[in-house]
Length: 188
Image 1 (cartoon, rainbow, N blue to C red):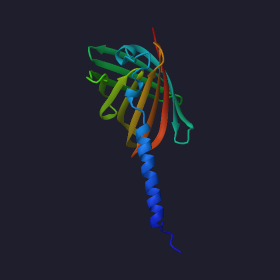
Image 2: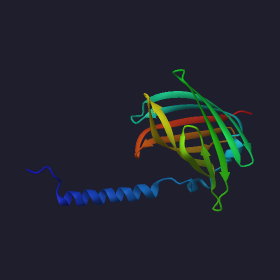
Image 3: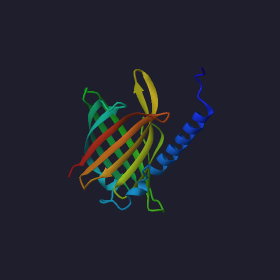
Image 4: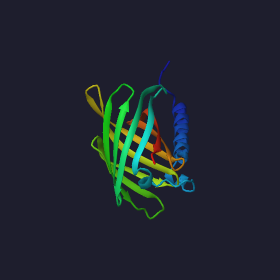
């Protein structure tokens, strides 16, 4: 008895995988899907001044692995911005990240941004349309004395003038490692 799959099985499985891949790709959200959603997310306006956030990171199984609060001190000069983030985790650990952002006008109705930070590999890139902002970047993540490069796919949705909800997926080699959810509240 052979433990190798039959040719018919491989053809059927291959066809099913191709169908799932095509279907999966066609249903993946795009920032343009939110073009008519209100309120319009003006990143420069919202992340200007002080913004507070509360977040959780869940592992692949959905268990909360980390909780944190973050305070952002943000300022813009024209199309260039600084987002200065101070994190305090539930275990008492503190981290800082300073994003240097640049707004890039798009001709297709999508507003684009680029940004760098000390623990970000290369350039982060984002797009805004309607109430949504999608932000992708690679983070150099220290774990147990080693540094791993992991990818973040952040989606932010402006709920009203004060609240933005951020949902992000962290992955490596296309494999989801966990998810991050943050609720931001803009101070007066």
